[in-house]
Image 1 (tube, protein in one colour):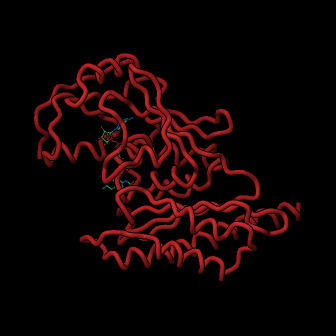
Image 2: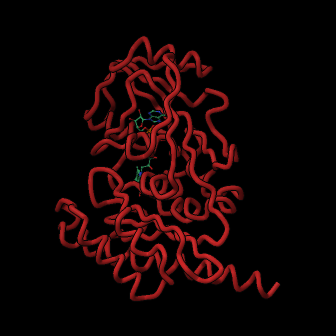
Image 3: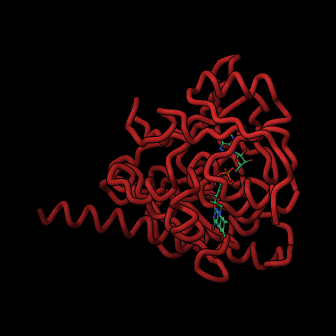
Amino acid sequence: MKPPRFDYLLPRSLDEALGLLAQHGEEAKILAGGQSLVPLLNFRLIRPTYLVDVNEIPGLDGIRVDDGRLVIGAMTRQRAAETSAVVRERSPLLAEAMPQIGHVQIRNRGTVGGSLAHADPAGELPAVVAALDGELVLKSRRGERRLTPEQFFVGYLTTATEPDELLVEARVAITPPRTGTAFMEVSRRHGDFALVGVAATVTVDAGGVCTTCAIALTGVGPTPVVARDAARALVGVKPTAEAYDDVGRRVAAALRPDSDLHASAEYRKHLGGVLTRRALARAVQRVRHEAASKERR
Ligand SMILES: Cc1cc2nc3c(=O)[nH]c(=O)nc-3n(C[C@H](O)[C@H](O)[C@H](O)COP(=O)(O)OP(=O)(O)OC[C@H]3O[C@@H](n4cnc5c(N)ncnc54)[C@H](O)[C@@H]3O)c2cc1C
């Protein structure tokens, strides 16, 4: 399959790119890694008049720590985030989720920003960013906007990005001390999109009591689902297998997934509960392991 005809635009600066987006608006599509966009073009599911290739713009990639947050430039290749020592150290949840995105060939080219902007309902990164209290930074000639994941992801393959805006970075919480995280998913084959995935983060104080917990799921709705009420049930208690079961049951009960070709709604609800229970257990086990090895040192 070949794509429909389009005019190819290659801005060399952010300002030039924002100018092109302001000028062409709805008629333009941004080309990042092309791993989702090119199939959409080839299947003629989209027919933009212009493709704005943002691969040559300096400063849109890179990973840094800024103002207590981990900042990932939109054009950072997924593989670069996966292999980054800073990501491993500051955001083990993100590091654990990255290799579960497609295959290494896709991650070599696919970008962190492209995955977030594409907003696949089974994508790993939207759930990770939601669990990590993330912010999505959008720029246009009109200025800058910072959106929470709940504001940014508005529906199936749809975000709140305006046609003249470019996603420039994602900012996520740095994992604090005494915090364990886990990302778990079930997919039919390695490299497939997740049927369901769960991102969990749990902080446990020196007395072994959970002080904060966040849970976000992918594959159970048009946007990532943040299980805020269920996560609250773990706060203030000493995490036990019974407590994980209870939270898992609450998550499953609150989910309203659709049935599709890949799985029934019932199965997705079931997976949401089971993966939540397992992810919480693994996250807490990691805090305890870390605390025990510190004591031994
Ligand atoms: C076989 C296969 C398996 C895959 N498996 C998975 C998987 O398991 N999990 C998963 O999450 N993904 C998976 N993907 C998708 C992959 O992660 C893509 O890389 C990602 O969805 C899009 O990133 P990209 O950089 O390639 O963006 P592109 O394909 O270039 O763009 C995707 C969309 O985002 C828009 N866009 C891109 N960058 C920006 C920006 N900075 N600002 C505003 N809009 C922007 C584009 O206009 C387009 O609409 C898979 C892809 C393939 C081909």
